[in-house]
Length: 89
Image (cartoon, rainbow, N blue to C red; front, side, top):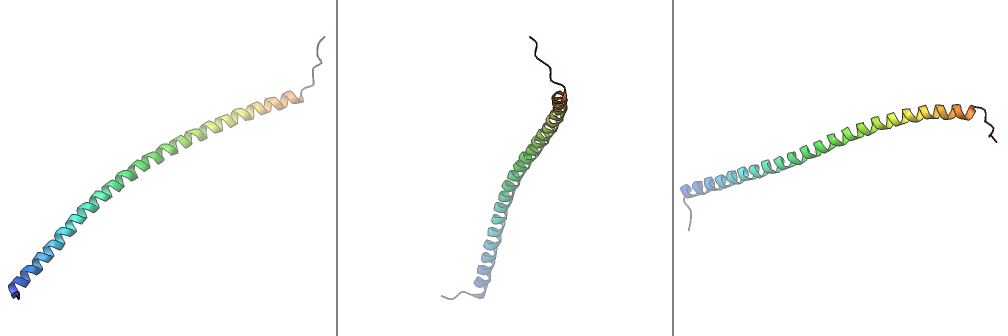
C-alpha cells in the first residue's frame, strides 16, 4: 500500500508536531531541574554566608584572646624580673 503525496505531507507534519511537543516537554523538565539546582545553590549560599559570619566572629574572639594574652605576658615578665622575696619565718 503506497501513501499519497498528501498523506506523506500529513505524516511529516505529524512527525514535526511530535518532535516539537517532545522538545517543549523536555524544556519544562529542564526548567524544573534548573529550579531545583537553583534552590540547592541558594541553600548552599546561605550556609556559606553563615559559615563566613561564624568564622569572622571566631576570628574576632581569637584576636581579643591574643590581646589579653599579650597583656598577661607583660605582667608575667614583670613579675619574673622582680627580685625574689625571702620567705618569712
